[in-house]
Length: 464
Image (cartoon, rainbow, N blue to C red; front, side, top):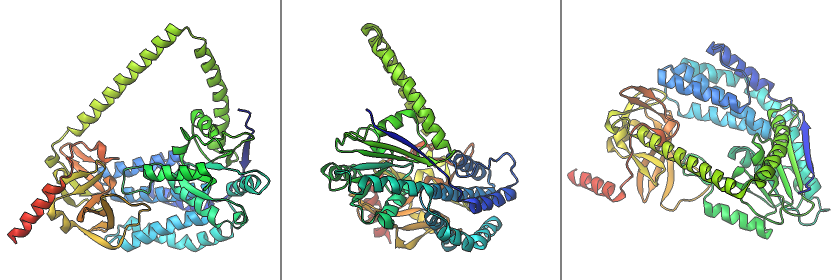
């Protein structure tokens, strides 16, 4: 395409204090096999698996240490992407919620709370006095060059790794003094999802943002990978991949969003980082991919069609096998055989047979007796979008220990407790399990029947 590409290696020396706190938590854990590769996706996966294994084994203090390590790692990832103040706000919010909601505090939790208290002033000082994240400085330089007035009608997309970083980058754009004089009209573009527990966009929201970008009402999008493939805006002439760790296909797709003439593609990463090494590797793989495409184009037509049929048949077989495996997993136990335990205090609070699916996504407990096990916060959960048939109520917490379980879902005026899958341990006939997704629990969950639920509740009321 002839698009000039810039690799922008930069230094980042911040985060030592957070890593020091993580070292201290590791020393308490006394698990030498646990990697200390802090601030990486691999480390995040490691502590998530540790938390899950500890929960299933009933090792509550180990689980708590793993959860807090995950939060510190999140803070490192946020700091690496945006500002230190954003990372500190993330940690403060977590510890404020821990103090406000937990009614039973383990010895490990007391130590962890005290550890953060001991260092929070130092962290605040570092957050306010440390220099700007070098990657943000480089991003500002790129935006000032492209939106500073010398270019005719610039229109760009900044790709970043997570929804959290999309929101933080948009906030930075709105607050950065050096960009206030630029004619930047930005919005976010993130994936659609079905979980009530995370912020996402509906397909209609996405289409409206894309329409505004296409017509020029917006001239800058901050996006996750949802915009890498299939977004065709001929006027787009600036693409920035901001600290992404992806493959060569994603790189080519993102660069392909820069459709206009004299387009600029930039990649921003820390000097020596995995992201920078991956981007350099991707450039090599891209050249190999071009050779492979050329070889395919030289194939005999009959041979080409036969190869396509073989690949399609193989894909269909794999898809059918995965579907059969998922269905088999859902039929391992009868729902009434599985107990629901609070993941924090391990008190039994219900059975799998109490659960129903709302809109094929949200899992609610319809047993009226379940209400004795949880409390509802006064404040309403804020979700940055509206839903057709339901709205959020307060956060629900374990009445015994204060662990957050999910939120109250007000579905067509009916109040239902919607549970996060990781807030529950599943006690099955073969042992305890912590599922990663509701779709992977080892028992069937039927759909919520609104009319039946209303009729049942009216019948119960008539008996009082």
